[in-house]
Amino acid sequence: MQSLSDSFLLAISLVFSGDQNLWEIVALSLQVSLSATVLACIVGLPVGALVAMARFRGRGVLLTLMNALMGLPPVVVGLLVYLHLSRSGPMGFLGLLYTPTAMIIAQTILIAPIIAALSRQVLQDLNAEYADQFHSFSLTRGQAGRALLWDGRFALMTVALAGFGRAIAEVGAVMIVGGNIDHLTRVMTTAIALETSKGDLALALALGIILLFLAMSVNAAVQALQQSAGRWAHG
Amino acid sequence: MRDAAIMPLHLQDVSLHLDGRAVLDRITLDLGPVGCTMVMGPNGAGKSQLFRILHGLREPDAGRIDWNGSATKDARWRQAMVFQKPVLLRRSVAANVDFVLHARRSDRTRVSALLDLVGLADKAGQPARQLSGGEQQCLALARALATDPEVLFLDEPTASLSPASVRAIETIVRGALDRGTRVIFITHDAGQARRLADDVVFLHQGRVAAHGPADTFFSNPPAGVVRKYLAGDILN
Ligand SMILES: Nc1ncnc2c1ncn2[C@@H]1O[C@H](COP(=O)(O)OP(=O)(O)OP(=O)(O)O)[C@@H](O)[C@H]1O
Ligand SMILES: [Mg+2]
Image 1 (cartoon, protein in one colour):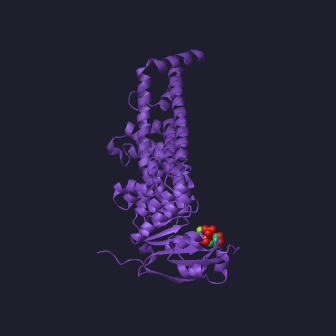
Image 2 (image 1 turned 90 degrees about the vertical axis):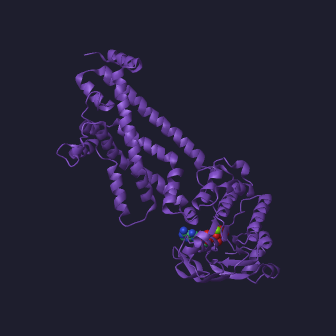
Image 3 (image 1 turned 45 degrees about the horizontal axis):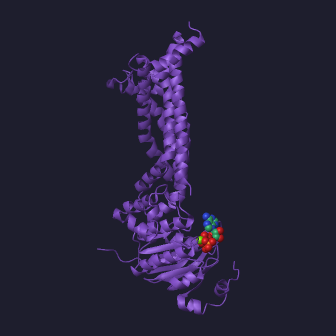
């Protein structure tokens, strides 16, 4: 077993040596989580916009539900997706279990509620400001919704980044439906868990450093976006 | 075939209560098919709320509104309104106008002509919300004109404008009037009302205190609240 400082130095050299195994894992993580973020936005943003604009019975219940779904535990999502995709499950015939596609599905389900709930909040405030003006222009609901999504674009990008941040950092769902198979479904978080338990701290640390760097980049992007939002929002 | 015009407008006993208070109290009013109606009256008289009702943004609690046979909800798309506090989109100046043209399936090459009209051509690429208060009102007017309205509601559109800009806006309004647009205009500026009005409606405490042709309104104002208001006395 290596000492911590040895592992750390090894980790740093791994990050900068272009280790193929390491970067393959990073690339798959990005591919899975970015795909899930895009899909979750395609589903979540229109739902957020619709609920932000609409007034209907049971809206309060729906909002509570959406907010509750934001806190879905990844392992539970993983389990549910597993039950559907396993060979005896209703969608077992697709043969998707232990593939990156299954991981994308699981992460999409995990973060779509986050995107929907957070974008609903953003767009509801914006709609309160714009509603009279939009009525005045006699916009259709679709026109108004699209205009809200566009005018909320900076805030919504931070919403998307929040979703991405949650996806890339979660381990429970991808572990269950991906299976952490080397060269096939191994992503950063599952690799860290495995390598740590095996005692290969160098690889675990190297991945940890990259994950941390990604998290900080997401934060920096959020801040930059908030500044752009301010430029367009204020007089 | 074009639908029948939405003017003349007839209001019968239109009332609005907010927080249990009568903001509009049995308004009965006839506005003719052409020209410029100036709506005047002290702060809180109900002018803006009357506009909101006429523009279909709020339902009155009582009364009847008749747009030459049409209901307000069917007449709204042929109206445009410049709000007392304009709400501009978080986009460039040009994109604000383009948005309306696009939404109305109108000719999108008119953006620069409309910006020219209100003197904002050189600011086309700027974020609209960074414009000055007066420039924002000019942009809101350009956007309203982009819909080619039959009826144009202007809620104190020159309230924060310099004298030169006020004249520029008045020239634009005259242009719209010449093209046959029906203009209904709220102002506190008696000079402006005199310059533009064909008729004047005076609201006071949610009621029509006076309505008549502009020349007699100003040369021989009705006794009471109107005369006091024009003399600068405080009303409430
Ligand atoms: N949402 C609201 N809830 C309760 N009261 C309201 C609301 N909006 C307006 N009012 C009241 O309605 C009255 C009329 O308001 P309105 O905005 O029509 O006045 P106005 O004549 O346009 O005044 P100003 O010249 O200051 O613009 C005011 O006394 C105001 O307090
Ligand atoms: Mg007002």
